[in-house]
Length: 183
Image (tube, rainbow, N blue to C red; front, side):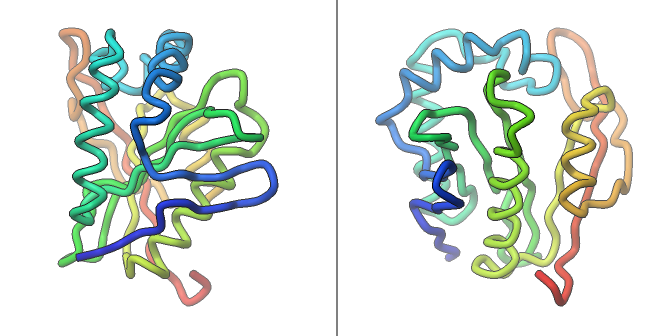
């Protein structure tokens, strides 16, 4: 079974901490205040209307972390919760996984997600022995596509009608990065 660190310090400003219940209420409020910013790109936002839903999500993420299937981290910028970055759908057998992320709109453009994702990608390749990492993004999400490319991911495919949100199907673009000698 794969194991990951509970805390990853990126620099003096950014720290990743394993999902835990201590910030569930703060996370709920941040999601609610960013609903319009996040909902066009992240279908799960449409399922978060009550604090108990965040608590249940966190509980599930803790179990998945303990079983080595998902490694979810809350992002703290100057000790303030600002979003999350997650390694999920981990296949120990196939040495691959997916990377997901979101950030409070007031903290975009500061390189927080780029640095957080970059460290987690290196961690997945080195410590978790992953060979392939995918990022899936909506066709109109230019910021996420630019991030994937900035992180060295290659656009591989468009999955038609892959996600269902508010009575409509949406496509996903698949970006992938394969471990290289430099990783």
